[in-house]
Image (cartoon, rainbow, N blue to C red; front, side, top):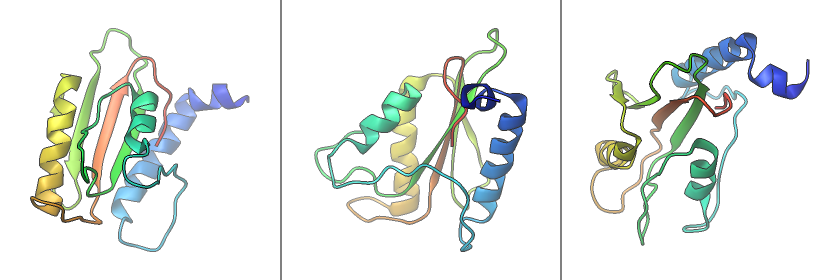
Length: 141
């Protein structure tokens, strides 16, 4: 099976769903699961890389903006009749919010950041989980 075929197969989707669930459960454990990480100095384009992969806009600021980890999950919608959407939740909060207008994602990420890290420049190691469901994206965590 070629890599492109694997990334769009039902089997790979089931594996990624299982990995996402394990990662969320094992966040505080020292068990490492496969992932792609975007790191770099302030204002070097980390969010731009994630935006290019996902096709969504993330928050921007002139000072520190990303004050807690953002786990971005991309899920390809097979059924083209289904409306594209995103879900967002933060670590330790069992409430998942569904977003149907992608323009609202920036504000939701900002609000979740305030919930986890407070106002100002404080940071938190607790992650925000953002899952984007679109027709023309690869399955990726």
